[in-house]
Length: 473
Image 1: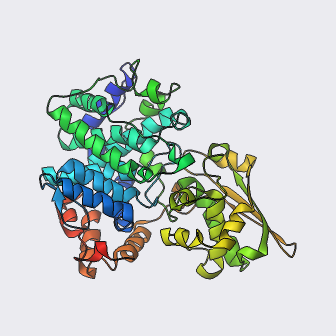
Image 2: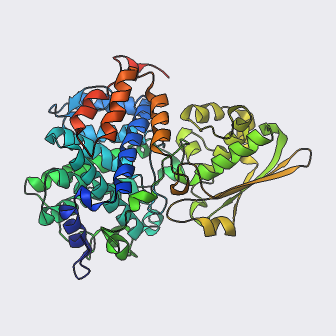
Image 3: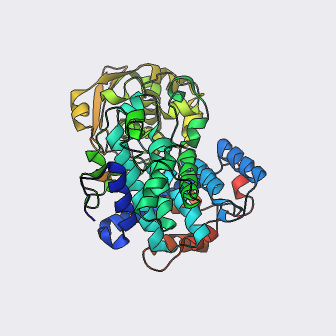
C-alpha cells in the first residue's frame, strides 16, 4: 500500500497498518522479524532473574488479574496488559535488547511483549503476530526518526513514548481494527506516552521499565479503543499532538516517506554487550586491543576514545556510581573491555556480571578515569541511523601506542547476526532453564511463525524449570 501524502500523518500510518499483510513485506523482512522475536526471548531469559524483574513479577502477581496471558518463563498467567508490562520489564532489564540508533528506541522491548500477550489472549496465528510486530516496529521507529534528536534533547525517552504508539497499532492489528480505529488507538496511546531521561543525571531504577511502559500502554490504548474510548485521530500532527509536544521540530516525511516500501526494522541492531547501543563498537575495539596486546588495566596510562557529539555528556561519565550508570558509560565499558580482552578474547561479550565485578575493581575504575572522550570527525561522519563507529587510542607505561577502529559493531546491520548465530546465543542463554528438547521446540516454533505455528504454542513451551527463575546465577 502506498502512502497518500494528501492526508495527515496519523491517517496515513493508520491506513497502512490496517491494510498491511505479511505478503506485502519482502521475505528478508519476514525472516528478520522472526529473528527479532527469537532475540526477544533470549534477552527475556537474561533479564527475568534480575532483582528489579523479580520485584516487578511479584508485584504483578500480587495485584492479580484475569489469567489470559503468560508471564514468560514462569508459566503464571495474568491479564494481557500486566503480562505485557512484566515481559517488557524482563526484556529491558539488562540493556541487552535490540536497539535502533537513529530513533534512540528499543522496539523489541516495547512492541513484542504487547504482541505476544495479546496474540496469546486472542489465539492469533503466527502470521498475524508477525504482521502486528512489523507494524509496531515500523510505526515506532519512524515516529522516533521523525522526532529525534529533539525528543531526547527535551528530556524524553523514545521507548515508552514512541514505543507506546507502535504497540497500540500492533495490538490494533491483532484486534482486527480498521483504519479509523487504528487512528483512534494511536490517539489513545498519546494519553500514555511518557518517560523522562533524568536517570542519566541522578540515577533511579525505573529506566529498566521503559519497555514495560511502552508495551502496557499500547495494550491499554488498543483495548480502550475497542471499548469505544478512542483518542484524537490527528495525534501525531495536531497542534497539541505528539510531534509538537515531544519534538517541536518533527519531520513527518520520515514517518510516511517510503511507508510500505522501505522497512526501518532492517536497521535494528541486536546487542552482544549489555550496555547502551552507542557504546557497542567501543567495547568491540577495547576487547580487540586487550586481546591482541595482552593488556592489563595497570599497563595503560592514557586512553582516548573518539565519539560523536550526540553522546557527549550522556554516555561519557568517567566514574559511574551504580550498575545502570556503568552500562551507560563509554569510558567505563571501554576500561572493562580493555581489561577483559586478554583473558576472554576479542569475540567476548560484556555481561551484567562483568559490570558488577568491575564496579568494585579499583584498577578498572582508575582506567575509566584515565579515559578521555573527544569529538572525532571521522566517527561523527560514520554515525548514522544504523550504528555509531568508534576509534580507541591507548598509550602504555612503556611508551608504546596502539589504536583500533571499529566502523561496524557486532550485531549492527552491517555485521548482522544470522539466524544460526542468534540460535546459538539463545541456546547458550537458556540451556539451564529448560530441557534441550523444549529449547529446540521453541526454536522451531519461532522459525515457523510464518507457516503453521501459533503464539500460544511458544508461550506455553517457553517455561523454565520450577526453581529456575528464583535461582541465583
